[in-house]
Amino acid sequence: MFTSYIVHPTPARYELLRNTGKKEIPISSVFAPQATTSTMMQNFRRVADAQLTESFYASKCPSGPAKVREVIKTWITKDRTLAPALLRLHFHDCFVRGCDASVLLDGANSEKQSGGNKNSLRGFNVIDDVKAKVEALCPGVVSCSDILALAARDAILEMGGKNWSVPLGRRDGVVSLASEANANLPSPFSTFSSLVTSFAKKGLTTQDMVVLSGSHTVGLTSCALQQTRLYSFSSSVKTDPALDPTFAASLKKQCKQGDFTTKIKMDQSKPVDTWDPNYYSNIIRGRAVFTSDDQLKRNPTGLKIVQQMNRSPSPFNDNFGASMVKMGKIGVLTGTQGQIRKKCTVKN
Image (tube, rainbow, N blue to C red; front, side, top):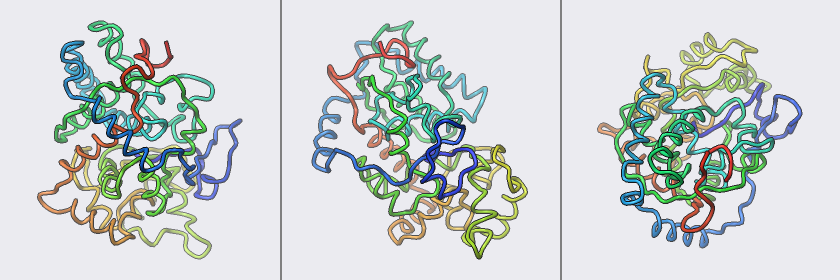
């Protein structure tokens, strides 16, 4: 969920090509330097902590959060695959310009058109439906960015996850650039060090990174991302030796060589997606679908956290909620900043 796919990718093409006139639009996994220093990030976080509150809509729109929950429940009851899709929307929003709902804006060069988002992100229609119903209750009050944060939490609840309190009071941005999404979203081919760097630039720790990656316990990915690992890993080895041989054989049955369209489950250990710490067991057993997931055990710090999350009972749920709250405060607009969009796809 926290990584992105494109058409016909290999690690080299994923990083180096930039052919925006065709279907293939790769993301760079070299993360662009951010203007925000660690000190500024701490200051922004203190401001966010002061202005975001769970009771933000208590007097302005008391039934708003409950309406979000109701609509999300209805949609996911019809289609469970929307749950990880909505969680991914929130992540892809927060990692580009902060949690300002810029990922929802339409436009020829908006974030929706970036390599990691185009033909990949889903759930926009769900957010539009939520927004319309909340607007009917409280016109011009509840922001699209708060709806994204609530929808992500509510989606996980529908998958069997544990509740966490969502601080509210975000406002919506008015700028959305595909180039910024290309520069900031992590790649499924990322190394451990590049993942740590990417998350640190957003004020998140290594533990936050490993815990939030646990969202890959649900959801789907494309066989396009398996081609290199399964069939052309290196000049001397066709299949990634990090893969458990039995698991690799299973993936090859699902993702034939040259298949760039079939979708497969991120967690192959269960028939139906449920919210659990199985992701970490899969990593330890060599059954992680993404290279970036396998990387989490290739570093002593990462491995220690993976092992902690894999214990029984697992601390994963409690840690996940805490890390989501931190992520949900990245670069937020509050007070008089930004706006409250009337429609999430266009600025006012």
